[in-house]
Image (tube, rainbow, N blue to C red; front, side, top):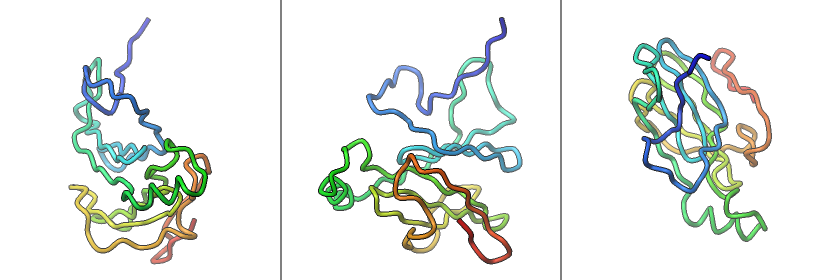
Length: 148
């Protein structure tokens, strides 16, 4: 039988206790973007190895402590009080619009597509991103207008 490369999100030997909770995969040119809990990973599709796929870049965007505490006060389990990246939409060739659940207080940011560097200010994710990681969504730009 044929074996396929595996994506773990972290190098072999780093068997962290938390799940990656994949939310979305999007191919843009030669890069695969994978979103999950507190993370966005990039994989260069021109360099896929035979056994294990490791990210070429990683963006970490965690919820602030206050947001996690507020989430817990709402009766949510601590595993739900993270920033699950649910929206990853290219704005143009250089920028991407990213939103996460942010511990049931959705927030959005712009990042540079090639470097995943934060660019701009944080904006509310209300009506742009689900509150809950289990909620499904579709997001896109139509011209200059964002639609969820």
